[in-house]
Image (tube, rainbow, N blue to C red; front, side, top):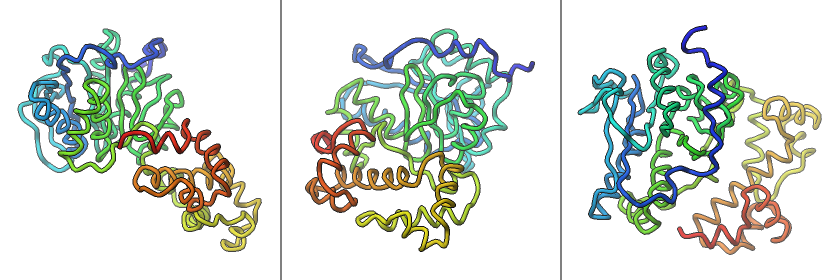
Length: 340
């Protein structure tokens, strides 16, 4: 067995810890490190670091410090061709609260035995680990996400589920005990803003979001946008056509018979396609589309809940509220009461 093979003892890394270890701690200075891998995503890294810098500025004191790390200490080339300096060696980074693995394109090629061993050593010592963009693949490959909920960029979701069935793939970002993972692009910004709020309060987090002209800070109930083709892992024109019809008919949902007539498929064919490739029935998929649209309207507009109900094809506010609570864990009225 090679060092990259996931050992049985890796299952023990998922310790029985029910809360975020940094949540509710004394509001002292936090220290983060960002482990850059070849071809890492610079936009993901920048969206993680900049909120920390701005938090220091709006608070007028040093709430956070950070450092750029590589396995050997040499600056690593990002996918856009740039390098970050100064960069220190992973073995010399000292004590940090969270070590974030920064991934990008061709992430499979970056996982060496030396890297996996170093990350396992940190986990065994009780160190918190995070991942930006495709960095979650590296943690999973090292056996450090078994029995955890985690997030990875949508392009890698399908492959990660197939290769690592013990990892539960979720939302835009995920905080599960001592693992902090997120998708790429702007998702690290949302993760950091949520961490800043947990650690230093909504006032600081809100000021940071204002400086970056962020209209709404997303939370861990938000899904990252995953194109249907990415979910399927290949192009299936019939299924994509059905899904597009659903997207185009939110206010007045179509019946399955009407969808079948429009697409030239039978009800049974549509049901088989959804069960085989999306592991759900068409009715459930359609409902999730409508509920996601409803949440966008609740959070991004001042539309009355009655209008949101009608706009998303629900027959009555009680029915809408019941479906919304079942899916998001809170009623629409509670969503609207939450601070922007």
